[in-house]
Each structure stands twice: as structure tokens, then as C-alpha cells.
Image (cartoon, rainbow, N blue to C red; front, top):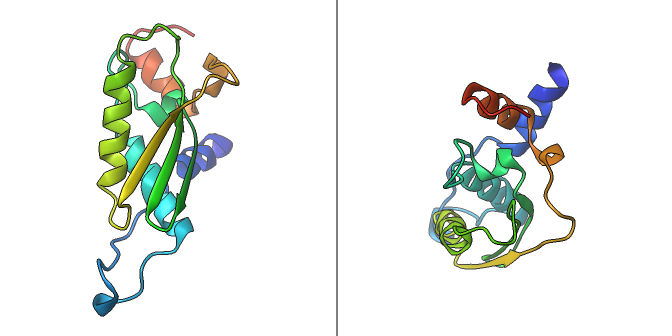
Length: 133
């Protein structure tokens, strides 16, 4: 169980507020923004399953440089009808992070998504909803 707790903590790092401009203090470092971005993305729910996209394993990576966020996002199926809606939700979540001014959401298909990408919390959420794995 301890390993699962560490994984969940890595997926949803703690966040702290940052100053909006130099008069109020230094701008957040890129790594701090990345942690805040992961936390914001963890609140984005999959439109078809009762689970967040981070716990579902759909976010393959994030990068933040000079106020620009890049999010690598996959989907459970190429023909996903909610593809555009999910991209918009991810972009909105990223823009909600103070210090991120521009967002690029990239759809990636390699490696293909499998249930092995689920976090322990994601597995528990799906089982609690009656979805067997």
C-alpha cells in the first residue's frame, strides 16, 4: 500500500500559491509550475468514466517553459467522441495555473493506452463504480 501512496502523491503534488508579478515576489520556477499543472490536470474528469484523466493515465507528460505549457494527452481509443472536449478541458485547466500564459495540448498515440497506465487510485475508483479490470 505504501508504494501506491507514493504514486498517488507523485501524480497529485501539493500546490502553493505564487505571486502574480515581480512586485509581489519571484515568479515560480518551471518545476513548481509543472507540479501545479499536474495538480490542475488531476481535477479534469474523463467525460465517459468516473475518473480523472491523470488517474486514468491519459496524461503522458507535461512541460513548462517561459509561461508556455505543453501537455501530451492520449485517449483510450482513436475514435473517442470526446476528443476535442477533453483537449479543451485540459487547455482550460492548464490556463488556470498562475504563471501559465500559453498552452499546447498534443495528442499522442504512442505508446498506445492500456489499463496498465491506471494509477492505484484510478483502479479503486473504477472498481467502486462497478467497472471490473
